Image (cartoon, rainbow, N blue to C red; front, side):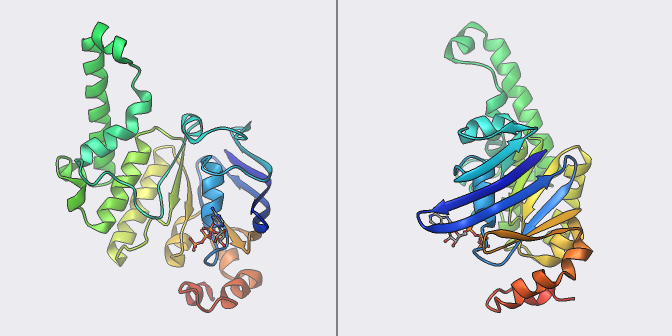
Length: 260
Ligand SMILES: Nc1ncnc2c1ncn2[C@@H]1O[C@H](COP(=O)(O)OP(=O)(O)OP(=O)(O)O)[C@@H](O)[C@H]1O
């Protein structure tokens, strides 16, 4: 579904990604892990058009993303959440999600004036869809509350609901459980599995090894901008290159959990 083909990215003389090859299969939950600063967020920024690759090609459904701005990439079926949560805190949960669905509402000002009934019907549909997505993320009961009132874990789940409102085929999650407690993590794992069962593909970056190993079908490991391992969780857990990459960074708080 999403392919990185020999992708590189430099900032001036700093080579952040080199010869990155990735295949995120349709219907999978695919994890990208690696020590701090390995280049994981840069991979997401390239996939969503926030950055352009210095070399190589990125494709979704075989179509190159080269030169496409983020909003066009969204139209190709990709949506993401961010490491630092980006929700509208002064708006209700429902409105936060409705905003996400607006690329699917087909009206301009003229259209609204000429066809007020059609406009209202689309708005109503967007609200119903938003409520459904809030239900998926167990936030439906708070639909009319201000997003500002949510706990950290709830804000992360709201961001996922809003990303889903763009009707993506592939959902990119950047550190979805950062700041969550153990039971919130367990619940989110369940919700992400259910999202996949509904036909979505998931590509996630996460430092929490228990979460990644318990959830992902496949995992790729980045270290200093290169993919050093790729495979099923058990193979990654015991891969000597992966263990060494984490051992070499004892400052990284995730290191002990990778060790077999
Ligand atoms: N816009 C930029 N300009 C210059 N350097 C950048 C830019 N964005 C990222 N980098 C550098 O690229 C490297 C990889 O950063 P990136 O955020 O992709 O890593 P990461 O694996 O997501 O790290 P973390 O796990 O800490 O979030 C870092 O050295 C970072 O300083």
